[in-house]
Amino acid sequence: MDFRRNILITGGAGFIGSHVVRLFVNKYPDYHIICLDKLTYAGNLANLKDIEDVPNYTFIKADICDYETIQSLMQQYNIDGIIHLAAESHVDRSIKDPFTFARTNVMGTLSLLQAAKLYWESQPERYDGKLFYHISTDEVYGALELSHPEGIEPPFTTTASSGEHHLAYGTDFFYETTKYNPHSPYSASKASSDHFVRAFHDTYGMPTIVTNCSNNYGPYQFPEKLIPLFINNIRRRKPLPVYGKGENVRDWLYVVDHARAIDIIFHKGEPAETYNIGGFNEWKNIDLIKVMIKTVDRLLGNPEGYSDELVTYVTDRAGHDLRYAIDSTKLKNELGWEPSLQFEEGIEKTVRWYLDNQEWLDNIISGDYERYYDDMYKNR
Ligand code: NAD
Ligand code: DAU
Image 1 (cartoon, protein in one colour):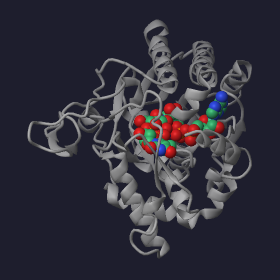
Image 2 (tube, protein in one colour):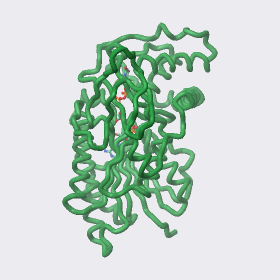
Image 3 (cartoon, protein in one colour):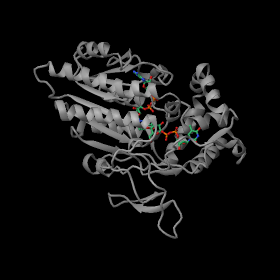
Image 4 (cartoon, protein in one colour):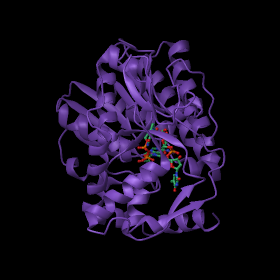
């Protein structure tokens, strides 16, 4: 069958990747979606079960660092667009094992870029109609201060560059122009990969786009990240390890809204541009944790306050960034994207999903992960 486009999506069996693959496979039946994933501990084909038999979907188990394989896949499938999500993504793991992060996030990205360059430059139309779209994070910008106008307690209302008012914990945001200042091995590896992507545009003329998104939440997130970990621990009545005083601030976006943004940017974004993606939705960790406990207890039919005793303050994450907050005004003004879900609705949907899909959780948290998790937390 001849497809209008052949798009390689890397990391498609992971959390965000699976939502992007699902959206593209269902929305664009005339595109061939080639989902490539190494299936590390974070990759899970169960995330894509509902689309595995759809005719425009192909799964390939491969490592992005395997340059020869990537080169031959570019040719075999005549790839004209790449949406690159494959990465090691967990900050705590990067603190323990930075080499794996440099290998996958930096060398893996370079391997994809070089394979795309050679294949696209070998074709008569060269870079026409091609795009290398790299998915990155707001963590490359570093950390923002928790600051507030005198006499006003945070969160307070502040004005974004769009002129709209939002609740925030500081007066500054990350903009597309903010200087890179990564602190963790994870964010340093992502920053490095972003630089390589831009270098391929500037040096070889490859059409590239980089987007930097804030914290995602929603179905299919690996339960080592705050929200699914805590939902899982509440249902199993295990301690909820709050790092430090729980005062760090994150800006949360429902994952389907991130996937929608990726779709819009892939089709309408300007090559060589950067777009920030975020929901103007800042939460102090401890406040978010209280909302989660309340929601899980309510949905499980527990009395209010039943799981409060699980909150356990533990040693802080090394180099823990204080506050992330994205200004996504450029994306709104230029491409018309806005989050579709309010946080209250998103968190309710998310908690319900994990409680309705306990088998998915139970399959993941067996074996190696259980051992890794116990080892990670036993000394905290
Ligand atoms: P994830 O850890 O859930 O998924 C990563 C996927 O990449 C997994 O399926 C894994 O098997 C695959 N992978 C890892 N190494 C690979 C390799 N060498 N070759 C092929 N596949 C490999 O991550 P996620 O949270 O879905 O994040 C996806 C991307 O989005 C990452 O690039 C991350 O930096 C970025 N991002 C994540 C967030 C977030 O809040 N989760 C926010 C902004 C940006
Ligand atoms: O900002 C985007 C980034 O968001 C992505 O690039 C990363 O891939 C993604 O993992 C996420 O990074 P964070 O470090 O912010 O997410 P995490 O879920 O690990 O932690 C969220 C906050 O909760 C952070 O302040 C640390 C804290 N935390 C986390 C865990 C796992 C705890 O207090 N206890 C925990 O057990």
